[in-house]
Image (cartoon, rainbow, N blue to C red; front, side, top):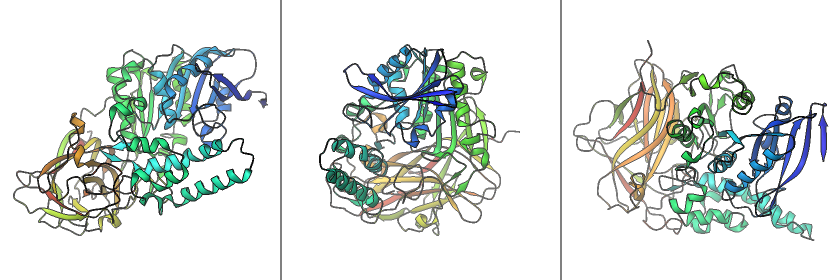
Length: 593
């Protein structure tokens, strides 16, 4: 089917492309009117090429008017495309075959660029590692590189909130519809759709609490996500996760990547690392021209109001820094790398990031910032850091002999997710939210500086070193960096988790249980942020043992992941003294004179 739009672009629907195994994938193609050959921009998406998300980054018809062929393809097993749906696993070679097909079309000039967010960022990286000759540039947005760092797992904890929601809502309904294709009784499809919609509607209020995880009710009852249970059976398993992992394969990518992310996105650290590795270790001069753009955005929101905070209109991706639209950012990149236009892209600062608090965009030239000074803020108290009304403090002064802080972590009554870098049901929105309700709980330890005497910028990676003991053979510790405003508003910036048995995983060691009552030092990666703590604000660190349902509850039993419906209370102790100096390391950026 072909349609003309205002005599300036042509749209063809459900155009077939045959993969090497004979499976046919279908795409919509937008192209300029008339005879000619143009570079191709390719989006491969599992969420439906005809649905609004497919055209949310920019209008393909407008891009066609500017001299590009836009191809939006349903990935294997999704919507109009044939084959079996297996998340991520077929995107490597399907991507290569589609790039080669796109380059050979009669109206293609043989140069292909790719774009897309989230899963569609992965569909760019995966074929790029195979170095198809026609691929010249990619623009992966808010996407993963390491599934064990925020996509499937994080430091040993299951990304339950994201995984359950994604499998059930983002992809589950098409699975149900395909299951009933050709069914002679329409009632069967209608009933199946009602059942999955009921599970979707109840996930945020009931479904997340389902135990044991190996029989996770919402997904077990609908049968839409065998991959979820496969992943559950292989926690933190790099060999098993290799087919969905980009980390370690960046050097196979020869083309430049414009990486776009958000400070409140669940893939922000992978977005940064994808950029950093390409910039420092890219195998070609073009790959080393990769760039990075980070706004204050969350995964699904790139406006200027994220969570409860309005960062100013210049933060809106509709007019970034009051200069560029998201479409113009993309097309300028492609104009250079696909059309060979000398538009200055190569001479610009490789990093453009939004500094929250100051609410300004700023160019940078390396990551981490060379001028940032790693500064340790130590935890202090007289043994009563529980709640924001306790005596916990944070300062650059080394601790001396101080009393420990103690709390009970009860997985039957977990600390509930309130904002952050999440992608969950509507009951758990992403972004900055006032943390005072959370900080009013006795199982949250709160450490705060006095009001700052001058603006203090923190930009870069953030790590917590926490000395702690537990009564359990396995448990979790969570830390959160917070900007406390003069009126008490507690704005979450970034957080992280460590599952005790995986305390040395980052250093290549196998998981091992802890000895109850023994003191261990835990390193908690809070990823990164960029924020100016304004004069009169305070820097705060919250420490607790749950953030549910973002991360699964540790049942404190030491059993294998997913087998427990038994929950045990853990008695936790946080140490901060001369021998056990717990601290958060902050990259403080000196004020430019």
